[in-house]
Length: 458
Ligand SMILES: Cc1cc2nc3c(=O)[nH]c(=O)nc-3n(C[C@H](O)[C@H](O)[C@H](O)COP(=O)(O)OP(=O)(O)OC[C@H]3O[C@@H](n4cnc5c(N)ncnc54)[C@H](O)[C@@H]3O)c2cc1C
Image (cartoon, rainbow, N blue to C red):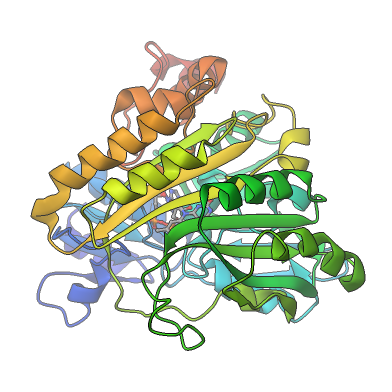
């Protein structure tokens, strides 16, 4: 198939260099990349996806898949290749009685959350409204409802996936259960997910928002202890970082290192107010914006043209040494540096470790360290900083959450998928994508000899 034939067969459209939309269509959330795909295919449905896969295979062009464009590694755009862009696939069908929703994968976390809020319902995603439900769900999905309701994948009931041979497959616990296992944590390795069916939970008004505390080693340690002691209804993300300019901060407070915590507590508001109280009393708050609020307000508006350049490392740990945090933040030469700490546990830990491809159920804390800077050429020095920071913090079995990995190399990918998880993913890969068509991702290669598995079984 050539590109003209592709164009004539799809209901969507092909965006190419010179088209007015091309400049924006090739941009990802992260800046510092200047990749120019030959064809960005804004697909309108699974048939378009299948045609585009066929076109990429026939033409030998590299294939990227993009939902929300927040890939930390920049995997959802390429140079000279084809991008399947799900941007226009934003259908959402909510069954408020059954508390389920079918969502096309071009939706963002905020699109979905705002719509489900109309019914007083929610499915948990991550901490940013602009992140795509596509990539986020396939990698796991850790966010504000995780300790109560599990990861996003723990609320995934089914998915429609177009596989490497163009077949539209419905995967759930009964049908293609191996694929359903793999896409819950294994990322975009197995096909293009066109829609997901999620479980919804009653989440209307929550008690939460932003709490800013002075960052001292004691306050960081106490924050982690409070988050671990909190009821499952409460999930907190604490970023140790310089205070950004905000209307309620005085000029002398801006730039001072703070713990900027985002907290969500579900359930009865009086109990939630009691659950957040220990955080408020850790130190004299610099700003206390915790209050009853509609859940979608946890996703504040984002500047559409914000494309930071970052060096980052992610890890799963059992403890955090706050002195190491302070020392390494001090050592950064970047404009902005952050250590983001998420206490896990709760419902995440109650799912058996082998039930999904997210293998870190027992890990207590996720930490992401990152710095932001202006010139891509500076990356090398900041990567060294991030590496040192990560190595200094790492404790327990080395672990990584795949959705926060950048170009971190094969050993870190194995930390995302330890032990049996890796072997099982490779086996599923060889069944659904033996030629590794979907390789521009945190790539799991097909197990050797796997190409015959599907043939024999079909
Ligand atoms: C600012 C920011 C905040 C974040 N916060 C959180 C958070 O709180 N919790 C959390 O869990 N993660 C978080 N992440 C990580 C995020 O989950 C991953 O970057 C995720 O891959 C982004 O999904 P996307 O669809 O926006 O990205 P894209 O760049 O569109 O896709 C990333 C990759 O996912 C695969 N993919 C995407 N859609 C599909 C699909 N439909 N079918 C097949 N493969 C697909 C592809 O391999 C693609 O390269 C954050 C990332 C950023 C940049």
